[in-house]
Each structure stands twice: as structure tokens, then as C-alpha cells.
Image 1 (cartoon, rainbow, N blue to C red):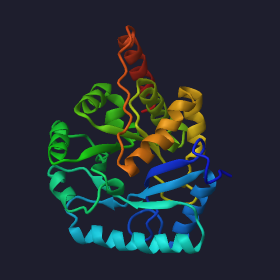
Image 2: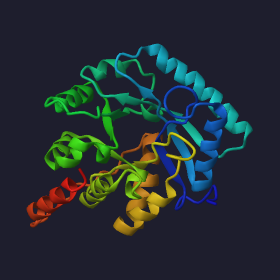
Image 3: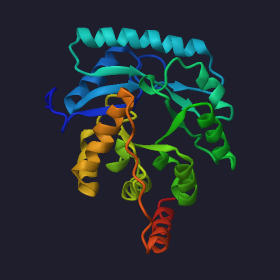
Image 4: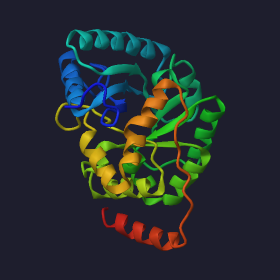
Length: 273
């Protein structure tokens, strides 16, 4: 059990679907509370609830989510669950997304950062333009689980272009532990080596299949990148987001053998399809 005052072990989860009865996450308040209790036992001390918001949704959806979050906070307090809850959303990417985002009363935890989910199919060649419009409107997009997107995983150059454009990346905890297959794990580990990860989050949807659990992924990240990097991704950066402080972004220099590494990485990933 992690103690309340131990920041070296506490974690902050910026992507979870624990708001009850609003999307494909927690179906009831009882399940939502059980998910939060599991997260608390695992070491999560703060969480941003990020229900799906589809293209074309109206302002009333955000207002409904805000009311539901108030109910969840009250229930969690009565159950003595030590997890702070903050409002957010996971936006479905579409052109004109910056217009839809304008009516969201807050970004992630009241910040100008918004979590964006790309469509699972082939990406438009103009996807970069859509993100440019979003940033021009004053938002800083965080791309949810790029390691699980087939086209991004097979196109390092596209991932690099999005990085250079200013996107931040959030990797799913389960990708580091093999929960989404070898391809997602290999991509997550490559991203970690390259310094292309700002956040690791649970993307928790349930009690069993995808819980609010970060501890095992943190242990794996410590093995691969060290304890300081694990602190950056699981605590410092997500906490900075919530508190409105700068996010730590790594800008690694490319190594002389990068081309050889890239070819080997592509061959490895292609085996998983």
C-alpha cells in the first residue's frame, strides 16, 4: 500500500473512463467506486476522468459530465477513497475539432491541454493540419495511446512529424506490460527510448480487463529508463498538468546509427501483422 505522503511512489492518472454510465467505461456508480479503490490501492492519488466525446457532440454533454463528476466525487468521499478527481475528456479527432473544444468548460483538469483519440482506420494525409488548427485555437493536444494505432506504429516518420509539430504523447500502461500485444509493447518501448513519451496513463475502463492500474507499468519503465524517468511520466508531468505548471519534454538527439535502428524496428513490427 502506498502512503498518502510518499511522492516517490504516488502516481497521477490523466486518462481513465471511470465516470459512471456515460461511455464504455464504468457502467454504474458501484463499479466506478470499485475501480477508484483499486487505483488507490495501486498508488494512484489523482485522476482526470476522460469520458469519450464524439465529433458533433454539443455543450450539454460537457455539462452532463460535470454534474456526474460531482456525484462521483461525493460518493468517493463517503467511501473514503483517497483519489482526487479532475474533469477532462477524450476527444474523437475530426477536422474542426478546435470548434468543438471551445465549448468545453475545461481542458484536462482546467488546463489548455486536451486529450485526442485518432480514428482506428487509415489516417487522412491532412491530419497534421487538423492539429495545427487545434493549436492555433489555443489548445495543446495530447495524443492518446499512439503506440496502439497501427498506422502510427508502422510509420515512425509520421510520429516524428507530429512530435515536431508540438504534440505530446500519452502511452497506455498496459502497452508496457504486453496487455495490447507485442506490437504495441515494442512501439511503447521504442517511444520511451526516443524520449517520445510525456505521460503513462491507465485508460482504465473496467475492474478486470483494463483497471486503473499503473504500478506494473511503472516497474517496467524503471527497468527500461530508470527511476527518474518513471517519476517524470507517472508523477511529475501529470501532476504538473493538473497544477498548471510546465510539462517536461525530452528532445533527444538522433544517434549516428539511427537509420539502422529504424530499419530493424520496422522489420520487428511488421512481424506482428
